[in-house]
Length: 249
View 1 (spheres, rainbow, N blue to C red):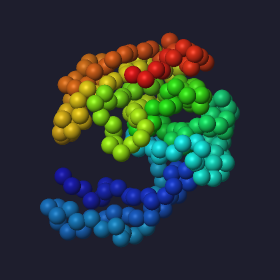
View 2: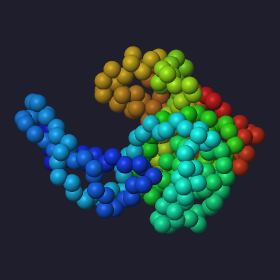
View 3: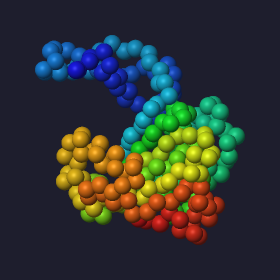
View 4: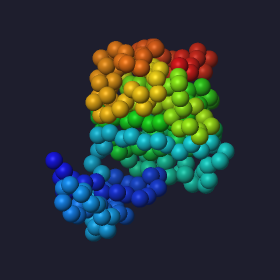
């Protein structure tokens, strides 16, 4: 049943300026009209809200190469300051502040900045360029992922680009926040390849749930194949470039 009381607040803001508390949405959606019409107004009254730890976060992050990042030093400082303010400054410069070592594309900043918003078990799914898997800046980034997350899935397509006009190869990465080192080490990273067009295999929510359920069970689904499984604890994150443990799938 449609419930207008839980319709989302919309925050129109640079994500690297967002804080977890005392947030004022720029636009508040409110229900108007009857259930059939679902007429929505964006002119509701503003109210102060706070983000509780986020259960799930999904995004298509900016495709901006490191040399094209405007105000790079300012953006790096935002990330570093926010992490420091939330208790992550001493966790290890080699992975938290990898962007400051140069070369990181802009999407990496978002992964770091998201950390204080998450709780144990929070899930994150991002669509990004695949370059971080095999470039120098990716070494520190992969250490960061290994320190704070179970890397659940890395997904690509063998038949189409996610966006037809994109000039880079893209992948979906799904991770789960945890401080449990044993769970991270025993986590099985699944490298997944989609072998048919998305529009052909996911026509509705039931199709998406069916595929997700199969992957969770470690099984292939119609048009979707698990091409490799790697125990996260077996990866030497200090030698990922030389060992090519994260080659394109």
